[in-house]
Image 1: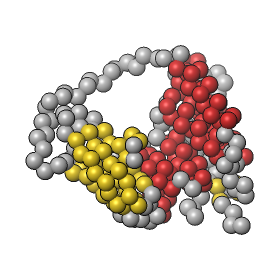
Image 2 (image 1 turned 90 degrees about the vertical axis):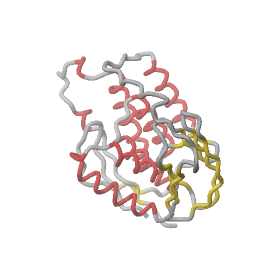
Image 3 (image 1 turned 135 degrees about the vertical axis):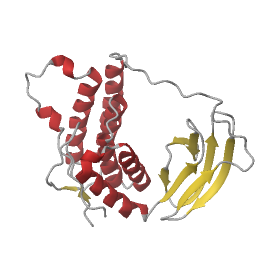
Length: 248
């Protein structure tokens, strides 16, 4: 049986921060995200990939550092969810900063390898806050999918909509444009101003954590037996250090 090489995902570098650091330098959400990341990394190294993915998702919900999408993509890839891995890598690349050049280069390389085996669906020239739905599920723009037939819905906040059944081949990228003749009024809904100060929701931390632990504790089936962990030179960053394996 062919063994899968699992990407080595190290513990968060910030976990080694000095113990004397001022307690108010980090929000409760970020601290809890760090704990979930560390827990997820340990689960990943033990081969409990589904539970690890649940922790990575919970960490991202608390503190949406783009690098957490790298961890999620690693787990999805080893679980065989190539569209999910490609989507997370794509949005990591969209959101990451250029000072993470080594990690960006590796993410691009991995994404190119996966893109040969999946299709991609996105939207083109739609206004802000347009909702994309693929096969009955909310999706980000773009989203990668398995090759084959898919049902796509696009809903703009100004009322324009599009329903279409599409066929996407492996390696194919499809962008759905605004229907011909549709009246697009860009000024109909002004952009919402960004809040300068984000109010901390300390109550959210235990709720998300309990949910993540329930998911992680309840998912023991589906673990890939024969997963082999490899290590590599870590890449430091805000919430973690990551090393990719080549995609197989």
